[in-house]
Each structure stands twice: as C-alpha cells, then as structure tokens.
Image (cartoon, rainbow, N blue to C red; front, side, top):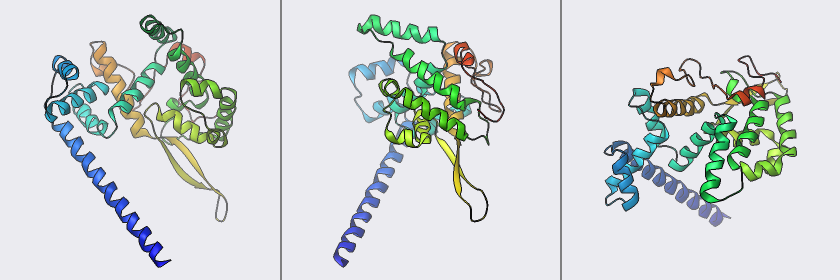
Length: 277
C-alpha cells in the first residue's frame, strides 16, 4: 500500500511539473506574439502562401491574425483586448467571433452566405441558415443578451430549453454541437455549451434558502467575456464600414447592447428588465 501511495504521489508530481512547463511555454509564446513585428495584409499573405522562414515571421503572422480577429483599431482598449485574445487559440477565437457575428445578421444576409457557398462548393445545404435559426430560437428562450449584471437564468427558462433540446436534438447536433444526455438531464450544461460557441462563459453563485436548508447555484453570463466579444465585433463592423468605433452602436462601454436583426426581435420578447419567462 505504501508503495502504491508513493507511486501515486510521484505521478501526481510529474503531472504538476508537466502542467507548469506547458503553462510556461504558452506564456513565452504569448509574449512572442505580442512583441512580434507588425505586418500588413500583403506581407501576411506572402508568409501564408510561402511559409514563414523564421520564428519571427510566424509570430508576426499570428499577431496579424489575432488583430484581425478582434478588429484591432489601435486604441488602448484594443491593445488590452489583444493581450486577452492571445490567451485563446486563434482558431477558436475566430470561430467564436464568426458565430456571434452571424447571429447578429439578418436572415437574408445569412442566406446569401449559404448561396455563395453552394455556388463555390456545389453543396445543396443551408448550414449557416440552419445554425442561425436554431440560435435565434434558443436566444428567444434564454434572452442572454438582454441580461444585466445580477440577472440569472430562471428555472422556467431551464425547463423550456430542455423541451427545446428534446424536440430538436438531431437538428442541433447536425448544425451546432452534439447534444448529449447530460445536456437534457442538466440544461445548464447545454446553455454553457451554447454560449461557449459564442465566446462567452458562465458565472455562478451559491444561494442558500436559509440555515440548514438546501443550497443551489444561480447562473449568469460572464460580463468580461461578453463585453470582450462584443467589443471585437463592434470594431470589426466599424472597420468594415469605414467608420469609427464611436459611430457604431452594437457596443457601448457603459451598457453593452446587442441590436438584433428584425427577425430575431420578432421572435424574442426583448427587454432590459430582469428575465422572467
């Protein structure tokens, strides 16, 4: 027994050391990217096509892509967001931003993306429209983007989202992510997976009904991750429209607000009060 205990402790120590080494390597990589030389689109395309000849070129390309992903506009806030962005794998960050951007589009804009893909790849499928429709319906139940600090998902919302999952399990699996039994048993795990695809994490706090009584968790959107992704989208939209960040209304620092497409507004009782379905 002593031998087994000693072996287990030794294995745990090795795991901790490997984890610490991995974290150290990631920190060094992040610093390299942040300190890399800035390059423009033409040079980035050249490195992409021909491959980086040096570590510095590869780091510069990554920095360029991270800046693109968050709509870097040279402001102090964008500089801070870039430092946060490099903590997330580039592919994941890009996908999260893209998912939320498409949710904010109109139905016609999403259909146009599918049409362009069909023309290029000859696939008779409306993938983006399907994903947009599902997210629209989920958001009409959860109304996460109308939540204010201090708001939590209500039990009735969890019940409604469970019913929606059961009724649309295969459709969600085909177009968003695999629906597991645990998502149905504990709907909050589904909500976590849903918002994770939009780059937003969940917070919780423990609430007690009184001394000696049951305790339970209340869940809400993490404000920092929500504001980060909204800022990124606001800057990207502003840059694509040739305007300034201040002229674009998707995000304001005091009160982040999503201006949903007309179709989503029609399907959602959208309000700023505490959610109560």
